[in-house]
Every structure is written in structure tokens, then in C-alpha cells.
Amino acid sequence: MAPSNLNQVFVANDNSDTTNGTLITGSTFSVNAAANASKVGVWNLAANAYLTTSLTAAVGPIQIVQTMPSGNPIASPIIDIADIKRIKYDIYTASTRHKVTLNVGNPSGNDVMVRIALRNAPTAYANYYENGTALDLSSSPGTVDFPLVGNFAAGRMIFNIDVPAGSGSGQHNNTEATLYDVIVAKLQANTTLSKLFTVTDNTTTLDIEARHAGVVFDVTVAYTSGTVAGTTVGSSSLITTTGFDAGAGNYWQVLSDEKSQRARYGNFNRMYFPMAFHEFAQSGNTYEVVQIQYAHNHPADTGIARAAELNSITIYSKVTAEDSTKADLVFLGSDTSTWGSAAVERIL
Image (cartoon, rainbow, N blue to C red; front, side, top):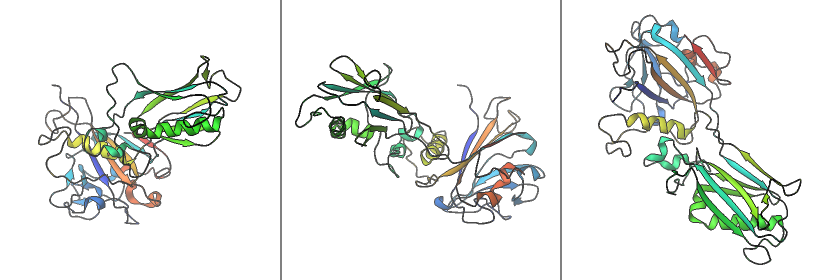
């Protein structure tokens, strides 16, 4: 089996320091803090102190460090500044759920079939261990696991909602508004569909939205005449889609990264974590993301990645309004103009 890169994930939750943000400061290497108050720092071995200035200002090697509630901190290998090849910073960007909006007009005397084709299931690591509800973006915190709906070997799963013509319970009464009312009622009454989607009836339009990060689906509305609504029926008949956008620094992403790297430890399997370990990703927090990639002298030092491959460190730093004035900037050197407002990438 080929070796993999050394990929480490650090999470900083305490940004209450108005000067230094989420950075560890001082000259004591091992600093303890509760998981929800964790900090991340850059230990300068030559100075025996944590950096609060530019990362590239360090004289000699460094280590990236994250506090633990007790004992020794989590730390990177010793890294020579000259070996750092890339630093990338991404601002927090909220995830956008996949959504389909129906505006299909008056169904007249046609029986209607709404067909939902589920194309993608969630693939983030948080879906594959105990806290899969983190991927439910329909509420904060989410409460619904992605349901077991079979495999996707055929490419997609198909679900149908039938709405007959006519008046009475479960029929659309030849009005667009009633059609949407019935679709909502039938979707919410279905055990599987209600776990997959939320639905919003706007009277003149209907929004069907995936609950979970990464879910992508298609919707068609067909009439008994054989016509597909939203494509050729009436100038106002529309079916529009807002695509899923993962964003950056969302809780489910931080949690997935944290857990996926923990699964590499030899004393855990990949789905369950029988030994207690602190969870640093915090529900309700949003994070900025710093990625640091550095070279290594394989096999003499870190020895996990193949020769010529880069090791990586991902740092999630809790968002705060004062980031543009705090020393979190140590990770980006002197480029302070866009911290907190845009993405930055430095190739060194």
C-alpha cells in the first residue's frame, strides 16, 4: 500500500484576545485549553517562544501547535521555514444547499407527476460516523441523518409524487396554488422524502431543497398529456435550479476534516471511535481556513509522504469581526489587506 501524506488538522475556537486573535502567545510550549477554547500557534524553536509576527520572520525552524485540554499539545513536525511552499487562506463562506424552484403554471385538467431524481448522496466524512446530522444544513444544528435509500450504482434514485386532477383531498383543483399545497403535504408525509428535502410553498412557486451537504437532485413535472411542465408549457412555466456550493469553513467541513484525520490513527477504525477523544470542531462556529504545505526530507524526517510530495496542515480559525487587526496574520506574513474579506494564496 502506497504511503500517504502527513495531513494534519488544527482547530482554533478562542478568538477573545483582541490583539492576538486565536494565536497562542508566550514562551511556554505546552499550553492547555478546553476544546471549545482551543488556540493554534507557531512555535519558534530558535526563540523558544510563539510567533506573533510574520511566519517568515522566524529565525530557524518552527512547529504548528494546537492546545489540548491537558497534557502535551498537538504539534506538527519541525519545519524549516524554507520548506514552506504554499500558504492559502479562504474566508468563511456559508454552504448553499441544492434547490429546485417550480413555477409550472395552472395544471388545468391534467393529472400531475412530480419526479425527483436523486443524483448524489453526501460524501463528506461526517456522514459516515456517529455525528452524521452535521450534514443537515436545513437547521442549525441539524437533526436529520441522510436516510439509507440504497446504492447509487445505477446513477440515481427516482422518487415519484402523483397529484391527480379534480377537486377534493389530494387533488390539485385545477389551480397552481393547490397543486403546490398537495405536493408539500405528500412530500412531508413520506418518511424518506421528508428526510431528504425541505419544501417551501410560496403560493406562486414551490422550493424543494436538499437538507444535506453534497446532495444534488433533478425535478421534472409531467402531465398526462405527455408534456413536461416547466419546459414547453406556457411562457411563465419554469423549473430553475440553484446548485450546491460547499463554501468554506462550515462546521460540517471542519468536523469532517478533523474526524477523517483521526481515522488514520492506528488505535481507531474508520467509523467508530471507541476511545474518548476531544472534538474541537464546534457546532455554531464558522471558520476561516489556512492551508500550509511544506516539503520534507523523505525518508530522513517526517517520512510519511513519498519523496517530492508535500505534507499539509489545515488550520480552522474561528471567525471574528476584528480579524483584520489581529495577529492571526502571522500565517500570511505581511499581506494584511485582505485577511477577513477575501481569499489569499502565497506560493513561496
